[in-house]
Length: 195
Length: 281
Image 1 (cartoon, chains in turn yellow, red):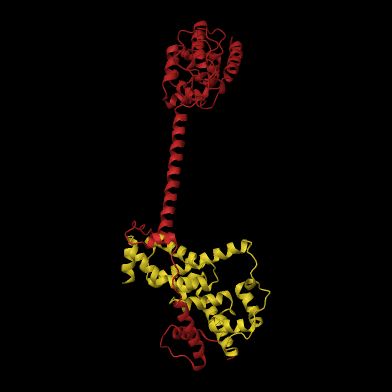
Image 2 (cartoon, rainbow over the protein chains, first blue to last red; image 1 turned 90 degrees about the vertical axis):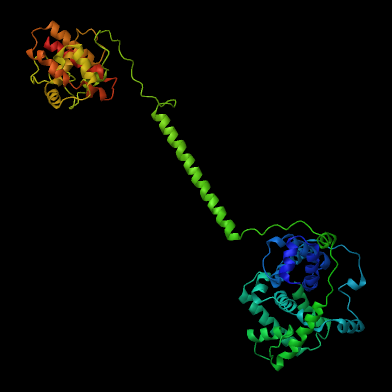
């Protein structure tokens, strides 16, 4: 179904049109939310679509623009969630696997490497903005201008971030094709990425 | 490997990762392949289950029509500015109307405190011939302005030196003449010229006539009437007094009536007139 027809039906309040939009874009939005480090991925994704459906009457554009709208809302929701988490004092019972002071065994490390995405490990070495640019450009078909709009930055800034991110990924892959040799190597980058 | 990627190279890598056919340099192909695999992993992420709030939207059926797209932001801004301008104009118009209304009301003496300047209570006019002219001529007599026409000048002895027609005004001696002076706004030039010469003295004499029956009234009344008394008492007065009727027309009574009232001056005029009259007598 053409997106414009879908949009017209959605404006008329057709539930089937909303379901179709959800089916087309929910995976990408969830992936973006997850890549941003959100915890409540499902909840945030649903909130994003509910907000987009509420204002569907005011939207004008193509499917890429609708994707940019979804990701813009998702980015703000993730930021809100991270701020709330930062203010909230976590109270949870102690779990051995959650204790950061514990060092995983070699076996656990090997198993983790086998199941993890290699590029994801290298992506963690990038700055948050660089990682977001790569994710947006790679996950969706957004243009530079649309990516800049989603991130709230200038196009030139996005160009620079993208170029430096890919260059860092290239160097990281060339230096360590299999990813970090040990968890200690990635600790500085992880702390930077999570900051 | 030491050189940084260019923007074109970065775009080519991303295009290749998206599945495009753009040529990529050999040294950059591993990166493009890794990005393509990562993209596939991201795309394979299963869609999460919708929340209960979202399930209301996704339920089959027709919901309410979505809100119509509003106007663009610049259109809303333009409307807001136009509305503000209209409001300012309405406020200015209302203020102008109120100010104009107040001005008209004040001009019409409809507002409290906006009435005419209160005049001192007119002295009792016991003379039978008084009344018609106001007290203004008496003011003229007191002020003795150069423009004061005939009849208003304080000293108009019976034998006024000028002897002009204007000078004869006070000598008219007839209250009727005085009334006519007060009522006729248009004086003849000749009369006025005459008043500038000898009338200044003649009228004071008339006004201060101690024999006047109406000492408190304005010089016009008192003076004219006083001259009438004078003429009666002093038949030997200048023969010019008989010529007064002509002069009384130019006595300037009406013009003097236009002059502002000065409540303090009549007394002075009376005093001067009294002294002049005493000298004459």
